[in-house]
Length: 325
Length: 299
View (cartoon, rainbow over the protein chains, first blue to last red):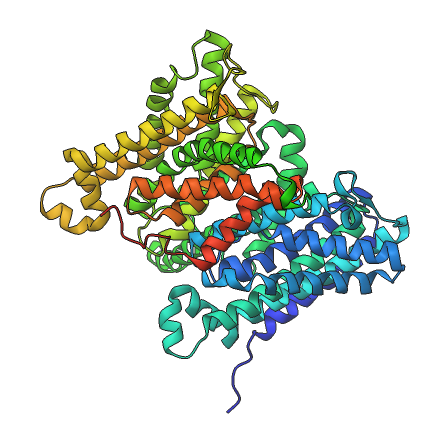
């Protein structure tokens, strides 16, 4: 007997259709505004999903992912400036170094819950300070400009889409694989997981390196897209908060919820905050409070609740119809 | 960087004095965070926000009404106590307790912090502020080094609060109830202690202490709505290092943290000293997560 596939065929097909549709979209008559909005969303989708591997799947909420985002961006930018390597090579190098940095944070993984979270604030802030003053590498407070021509910037749409699609697919596979189940076991009870032979340290290391490398990659691609980098913004606390917010809005720990959160995040930033910049933090704060209190799984939880309601109503109608006749 | 032998003995003395003075502020910042964590097992991530809010209340009363910042402390205490009670009753109480409540309470209180920050931006704008009184630049000569008057007052108040808190927890019925709830909440219900009321009270006292720390901070350093994360981190280091066992553990830990930060000037380029607190945090968490004095809770 053949084992059922990890992902249902129909889901794979639907996912492929969506990706192809998004890939041909710029070939149709799409405004540069929409083009930009989508590219930014793809980059953030990849970042939010990768944050969720650590913050959602293992339940280790990190307030310091900006460190990996910044390292990916600056390594890629510096390599492109000094060695004129092709961009994809620079991005990959940025991702690898960011992953290496995550591995260097290994001692932190012994900590759990609030201890881990607050330690990540420490790592994030320390790397912001260090990189702001490491002028030879980051250009200090005046930042670093990258030579990006308009055509390449336009093409980044497909690179970003490819990355987002790959990370989304990886998230779904990860969630359903035995690796994902082990992460879930560590999240529920690290000691009990250790009793059945799941090393919390090993698997957290693995997922933290993966998460860090992908976030580093998004940092690198986003650096090319904006063609400008500045340490206090790239390594900023606000950026780390962004990852947390996207995941929470979409649904922490769900396979694809954070992608939805990233889209909402971009929309809120573009439409709501452009008109009310003075409520920037407050909107996110209130959103965070409401979600945690009323719908801890965010939009995904809300969707599931609506689906449940619809399902309950549908059979009821089928029963009531013959009775009415 | 300077070679160590060039540093005069007097300079080391100056550094030691400023470390002691800074310790008073750090201890005051940490009491509230430690108390709430010790009793409710909730890390108040809004702690830095409450400190910032306390600083602004003190500043507003000085700037608008001309009230001396040290005299405004009772008002700040009442306001931030009410804020803490509202935070507990309106938000924290509605969360599941125990392991499942961990990340949720962190994110919830983080949301509160963002809201507090936004309110501060709206009301006070993003400019840096300091409370500058007529005596702010006065200094006294003690043991051959000049000591700023405000820093001395902050140290004195910090120690006074330590003694007050110690007496509250040890000598009063409420304090005994708080300590009992910290040890075993279930048994407290059996002997007729209203655990929810103690939780509310503890959260209120914790945020009241954070508010006071804010006023003290404002009389020494400049602050803005974005302030709070380094205050939260320092408080957390002090709490972890000092453990939850006693108020005086916190005082000693604050002294250690302040000394490390101040003396880092000798070996690190000055721009890196602001990273020392963060590095210390990581070191302490990794090497001594149980604190220097073990993990006894308010025993």
